Image (cartoon, rainbow, N blue to C red; front, side, top):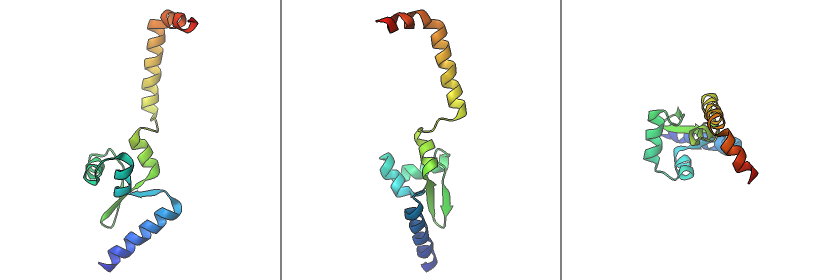
Length: 100
């Protein structure tokens, strides 16, 4: 029991100094959902997390990806294809709207 508390304190101190790791409680507050929902998202693979002892920690970069702040290469290509298709089909209408 003492060992677990010690490792949790190390994780917390490391998080505070480097500001890279977040606890499940912190992520729950940021997203405005419950800790149980965070655990479900970790289990489903929607949020990437590491297990340290009995606790999960989430890197801030992984949280950005889970929030959709960071676009994957596949998502960028999908958006580019959609824009190209829209310009091809509605190019003249878009030009007229731009003149107004």
